[in-house]
Picture (cartoon, rainbow, N blue to C red):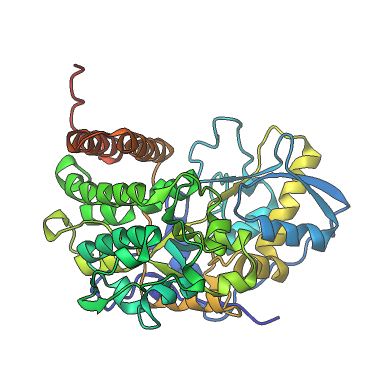
Length: 461
């Protein structure tokens, strides 16, 4: 087996030619400050001694789309049957469960098991206190597209210009493609991307003939509030207040409204729609697509940054500049694996066996890095596939870290996005759209502002 490429901590600290600085590290986990120290030794991370082979068993998993391939690899290697119905033995959570509970159940302290504690130490997680979940890893998040479809629309040399497009150029391009989908001959105005001229084809080429929308209309594509809000939160700097958040969130609001106006509710299976050429972009983490698509389709994908209408006046940080915030994709957590404590002992052992295989064996590392295209908690990544190698290169070139949000913050921003979508779809005038924008801004600021920094709620009419 080819050893996974190790991404050094210095490179994950966002070495960027655009003048960005910062550090992408685990948040909300005891001992996260030791990650850099534990990753200082060069070369591949060591593996733990193999656990005894598990007896044939059933493991009930609730992991959504992510980690399906890795868990299937575990099941195949260990004679385990995976089940999706009934009480879960192993769950994938969106954020780290600080309280040790999920709202549905309490969680098992993973440091209470010696082998799991050793796996936690390997991942740089402190064994000095309770540990309720393992990080699944990180991956790129942004607008994913099929390079063949983009090349059919823009020619072979579009990559740098599309990534470096201004907000005005990006929004004009999105609107032009929507018009082109309806009638290519009527959409023959010249476009500029990064200041360079482009023209959409006068007839639909085969690679782009099935396009029905620029963006997919699935709720999954509109969710993932944490990484979606990353550029706005980074722009706000160290203090999140109405003053620092409002302008950047207003720019993000334009992003959501642009997506809303150039998507279709008829396309909800985003991965399949992207693979079939029905949509040009889907916004989500790479690991979601890695689970849903075959190797040939994944090899054709590229990622573009989530553009927003940011201006210099929106920046309250010295760590990030406008170019970086607009031109780089986001590195986001793929989730956290946890074991419900109320499950019977045999079920907890079944879940623990899966975690030990994923975090303590060469086969587990292979599944996480090559099958799921994740960067592991110990900063190894697969580079044997074209997209895996490309992700490694992109991380080394520059990314934006997705700031950690609490469960309350995540619920608040996701609700704000969904309400904005609904209000925008129902808007009958510019006045209605303006009201929808202001309601979004108030809700998002209230969800994200530091304690004592949120504005007082508007009085009820």
